[in-house]
Length: 71
Figure 1 (cartoon, rainbow, N blue to C red):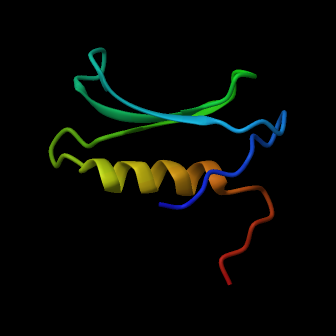
Figure 2: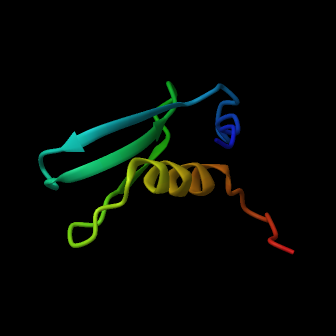
């Protein structure tokens, strides 16, 4: 698994949480920091992401910074 980058706002290490979101009726992966920043990646309702796909999508989204280039 790819390591999470520090929070872009406060520099602290975030935590990753996997849980079932009753309000959305689907699995979700959250990456959150103590400063309040974070992201949520929901599994698809029609085709369920497995945990690994959802986690890698969340990590990729969290680790992307403005100005990052894919070349």
